Image (cartoon, rainbow, N blue to C red):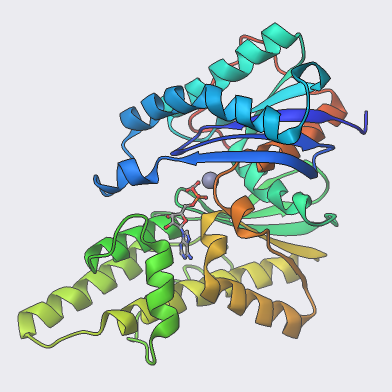
Length: 334
Ligand code: KG4
Ligand code: ZN
């Protein structure tokens, strides 16, 4: 079946989101309730609080998504929900809500992979042409995924330590910026005139893996040294050095993957896809190398349910439904 009207739920981390998506590409509504203000004072996401807040918001988000979409519940074809990876307690809230709806409305439930969702966010704005390469960059993930055809995911590279967003957040914290620090570091870096020289971690020449913890330590060392010596260190120049190092490695490795796998498109996704420096560098490199680059608008880069609806449509077409006793999958691999 080509046509679908899917209600999608995403609660894997600190955003409670519900969307209504038609045919996996037309977003009728995409409600997002962010808990960031609550977690900020702890300097990161507190899992127990996240679960409780999802419980508080999920019903309202479902009601608002349906109302905003202007549909009746009876029109829905299926319920999609993020099954993993993510925080176990947070995932359970979304899966329980999805099961209740599926049971009450007597329609299929589709468990969806969070990263497949991030990748398929690109389908909300563009046709996808295979084979393609996706660069997934978020607070929890840094991955290069090769897609030979629709719905086929092959992980060809991943971070061996920190995710990019996580490294951004740690650097931000070290220079006294609020959580989540990625956007603040991005802004400082874009405004700085010069960059502090920092290392790049390439790993083996043919590797698509990443490592960002060495870079993060180099930033912390530079801060410590400047304190010990009493020599001031410009935070903007430090941020720019960090950002340039991150971007060089991300751009180089993803472009190499595009060439090696003969990809027709490069898809950028995940919260760090909002990074101005990364967008600019990838855009310039793609133009120079004649590669088609797709980057979703900001609201589809960070966690949202519309992307889950987009990914679930594939499974809908295949009739790949789950039974009501399916479980969350906190460390789900693609
Ligand atoms: O995809 P996302 O919303 O949640 C996860 O699934 O992790 O990504 C959130 C991450 C955070 O680490 C945040 O600091 C980072 O994305 N981020 C950025 C920018 N905007 C958000 N990192 C660098 N530059 C940005 N402009
Ligand atoms: Zn995410």
